[in-house]
Length: 355
Image 1 (tube, rainbow, N blue to C red):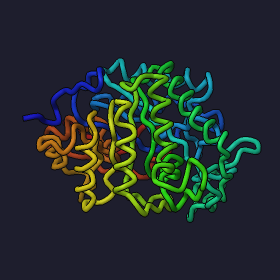
Image 2: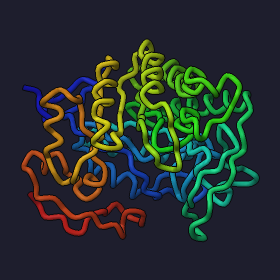
Image 3: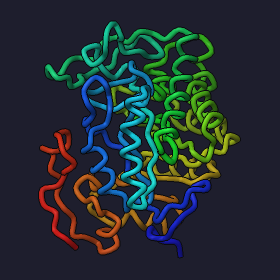
Image 4: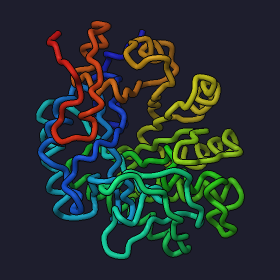
């Protein structure tokens, strides 16, 4: 029987186990230059016992930044700083993918340089607020991307993927979930276009498909992953045709042969859709399951019964840097210190007793 603690081959990259660290925003970059700090290297190196680390969302282009102090992968300085992170992880035997996250309409001009402004598939503002250094501010109406600008956005993902490989990452994950730019194109509530990038399901999946194809062509499908969150309403996303939408998306990207599909399960009742997507995808499947409590090792049974190839953990990994060992021993687990989640320094736990 396959267990969470068995190694797995991820399209040619050997992972020591089947426990993934899910991507989580931490806001620990150096202000507007978007370079990860020394604390970022320490943070990820502490968690290198994960089979796979997927980083916090990294903006591929300057206008893709949605939160304060988040890192980028669009400058020489950022590449050099990320090299320190990947080296630290690799020296401890870990594997790490960079998550490329263009926030689209989620953000605010105050977070961007010069006359940059949040963009989106359509000029539809998201309900809600975003945190800035001056406090929470309402989301603004994004500038609608022209056809040429949509293609430039695709090229931005490609350039960032190339930079990620140069920085020493084992691969990249395209963030197509949680209400950011890729999902904004997928969802009819945020995509009101009538050109080739909107309207029908075929057109609304086009941006995601083009990003996947272009990134895979640039750095190799074996270094490319995609994260999705079907039916997720985060960041004011509204999908009216979820099953048809994601079935079409997987059908379109399947020939590319990417390394993995990472699914964020938004609710337990979505499990039938998750299982259907699992059947439709030939590569490695990573599931971030909807569970009653994250301090429960029961999710590891999803590997044993074949529901998924890897299980991704989020906040539990912040509080427990050596999470695979604690899962193997069924605890003890540390409590998450929410006061340090977005503060300087790598600590995210209230107490950290040795096993």
